[in-house]
Length: 114
Image 1 (tube, one colour):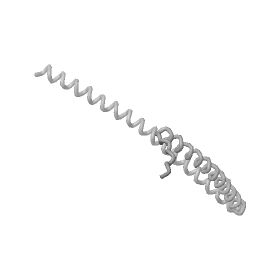
Image 2 (cartoon, rainbow, N blue to C red; image 1 turned 135 degrees about the vertical axis):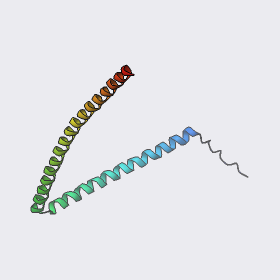
Image 3 (cartoon, rainbow, N blue to C red; image 1 turned 180 degrees about the horizontal axis):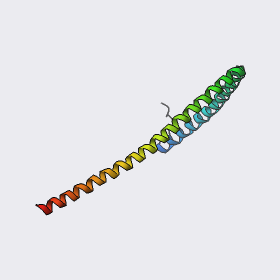
């Protein structure tokens, strides 16, 4: 029988290095593929945009302007609500503090009377 060649021992460091090299190669291939795909998608969108008539683009722009105006109205109402809420909370705290002080004064008076 012929002696078989000894296989070098596989260590954890060797396995890690081999795995890292394989991942590096795979990552480069993926980056290249994604770059090509990204370029293809951008070209497709540009071609699609060119096919859209200017009238449709104008309609979409007008719709976007209306949406932005509506959002601004909602934001201003929200700001107004938050300001009113802050004023309400401050007034409520003052009333609560006054009631607490009155409770303390009543307890002191009751203590003096009894």
